Image (cartoon, rainbow, N blue to C red; front, top):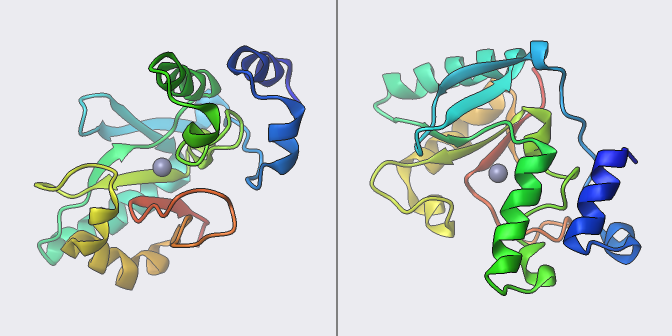
Length: 174
Ligand SMILES: [Zn+2]
């Protein structure tokens, strides 16, 4: 494993035991030239994806819009260091590591590192909650996302040890 990741894991107290029982795959960060800023996300941050994912996302968003469905990007590419900071913030708030890791992947193991994962927000609904499942955006995605090369990564009772995430979609390619 990369030195940077080893250092991050040590910093967060993610021991070998956590890594061995982890059921997620390692994701490399793409080189910068493969990434592009696609939009400004819901929090006002740059929304970054790989060029190929961006193309598929824009096509999918346009198709949805034709049916009056507005897919809003919440987050795309995330670096190893960003992932570390997310976990660190929760640790500093006193949340146990085991609990954090059912919601946030160990740095190195988030699909967001690949620039191919997108968290989608539905306007007028809380962000990143199971409630997304009841939105018309989710209904549209369930019916159409596969056509654009996207799949739901963490369905209910998934084998990856991650909670049900109806908002998180991954570009697998066409
Ligand atoms: Zn996600």
